[in-house]
Length: 273
Image 1 (cartoon, rainbow, N blue to C red):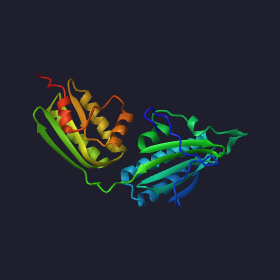
Image 2: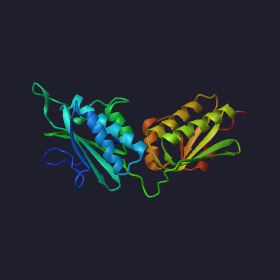
Image 3: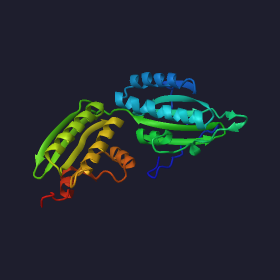
Image 4: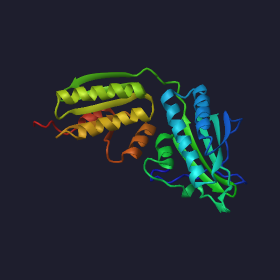
């Protein structure tokens, strides 16, 4: 997926399907409209066993379910999901079978599947680390990639708060997940109760993994600060991948800085000056 939201095109084999990763898949399962629930259950079991954290398991299952639903509704009406573990990531290939939907009318190719906010391909783009799509004589293939935790991952979430001059710094570490989202929300709520125009720096340097619920907590925090008369919230220390993710989700909502020190220099002056 490129920065403007268009789909990258992966290498295509002679039969029109994307070139699969090497090795036997962890999961190889067909689906149609009546078997999407069974597909979700199988996905959850296999990607959990492969080492994907709980929150990202949910993200992957939702993503593949949305793509499979697209194949049912807008593609051939049925398809197949294959999952491989390769190079520190899970590669999930969703293909329709290239069959006509009804009365000889073929389904649309992947590049013609609807791309609407909150649905199908939009959800896949938002939740996956990477996404590619291709179409050929035998049908369409969409592949989403979910990175597995690296060796530097600290799964236990940590949050510390300190006042530095005229601003507050919240330093987050470890997994930014469901539990972390609750702590971030509570910390921002407490800050807003104390400061009607908060100047907040969120230091994300030590965040080593994230899921959709953790990201939603950052979006909510930004919205709450934006609702104040003169508050400001800057995000600092993000990895390139994390920064791209947030920028794609909310192109104008966040202000990014390389380091907390850089963020402090960019903060507007206090409202009482």
